[in-house]
Image (cartoon, rainbow, N blue to C red; front, side, top):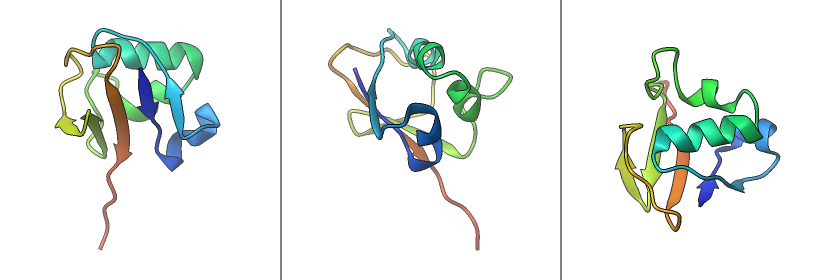
Length: 85
């Protein structure tokens, strides 16, 4: 499936969009980690939870659970939430 990568993580992938596989978001990030070592830690914390500053969208719908089921034709967007004041 296609995965949109935010600018802050493109140093890992060298591309704004990559291909990855997985039946869930957790499996998708495991596959991305195999292909692009170090990227998973920037998105998923030590407890296996999505980091607070990260947002995931599957086919345009916001998802927070890494157990969310995926299909091969899905489009996943990884978005880095901005904060500050």
